[in-house]
Image (tube, rainbow, N blue to C red; front, side, top):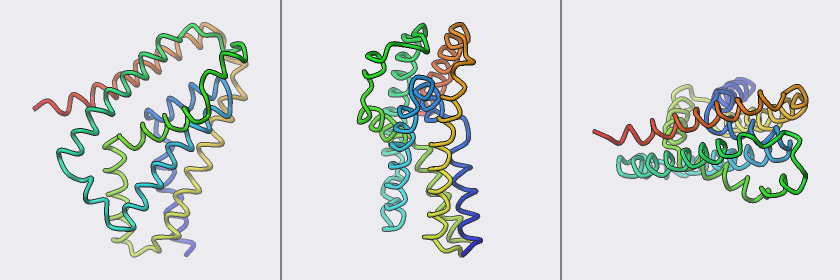
Length: 200
């Protein structure tokens, strides 16, 4: 039981910690407001939970089809490029922006953005398919393992944006400007790679 939870926790960290589109978005939003970063993370986590339920009920194989994965790559890539453009366009917004500007992004929109970006990412499907095979191969308790994974993801999406938000006063406007440009370029890179893989 402890082994299942520990392995699940480590798998969860493996899914949550690497620098990917979701973590870039969480960091960008957490600089503005801690809650914004958490909402993006909760949306992404909800998408992961959805895929976990699909695995449990044996429906995940439906998504593991070339035409579905290609469609997700197209939409996911286009969505990432759009997000990259939005971040680049707002690169000169000051960290200490007025509160009314911060209210532009509602919690529901942020949650939906995190959920959608994770749901339409074909790499997410590949990861959870790999995890299901790993759990079955090691004969771990699936429910305890999944609990460990979700615990790690929840810890990451609450702790990481908190640390980013708490250190935002150390980020100058010039540094913030270049962080936004770098974030936009990274997201644009992820998006073009996803779409580029569709080209034979």
